[in-house]
Length: 243
Image (cartoon, rainbow, N blue to C red):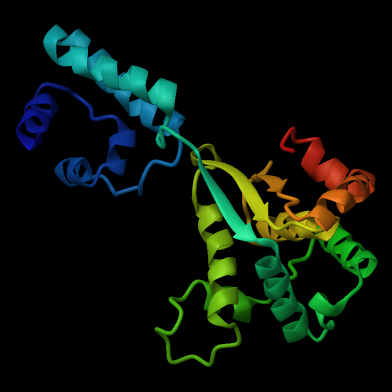
């Protein structure tokens, strides 16, 4: 409660700097609000400082609940359970098609699988961004809520905005990126590239392609061989222990 926080602050000489991440606490201390916690390590640091301070003040009763909270954070992190992201394979293809068409590179969705793989591998290995700033800015605006001219459909905007949201979340709160109705290696490489473009932190989300039709299941061994023979995929995806 705010009363107990005031009481504790009155009996401690220095407030842990990390508590400035708490809006109410930062207003009490005059510290600048640092934003929300994004990892359990960030949250454990002030909790351990609070626990040590309470014990030093002889407040064993108050330290009990804090100890319980420390154990819970250490065991479960901030999210308690990881959330999978799931999207249908053609939605990613449509998003990449919109990007390549905007750049004048060509109609991605009409390319043969070999051309898609070559293009995606080149972009995965490239140090320059693929997605132009105009599209990035549109993705970060609510769809339909701006006077700016739109270049993305609502469906493409939703897909790309999902990757932007993933990049802002701690990876331990997310599980796998599941591709429904996966057909080929390019489906996996496309999701990998979109994660890279939006700055998802390494090693990124593991990608789980679901080969669901009979034809796709029969083609799955060839698709996986293509992935394992892909140098960017091996070096950037498998080395991180993700896939």
